[in-house]
Image (cartoon, rainbow, N blue to C red):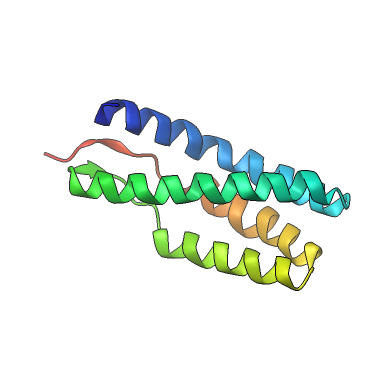
Length: 113
């Protein structure tokens, strides 16, 4: 996969995260834990890939300002909420924090010259 293809896939995925975050919040509030937990697993894998791609971009002169530390914080808080079975807290995090974070996240842009 070329760097341009990775940038394209990164931006496509980044644009899908807010809708996916709302989907997770809704499934948690409906007490549909199977679907919610499956989607949370997919979300976790996806944001880990975004984090890895962001690091790759920085090494290759691509402009990407995704706050990886904030993503790590989200993952830790999600895990903590799930361990406590506080699904309302986790739903609120997805709706009010994670969705907002990814709505505001800048897309990756070409090579830095």
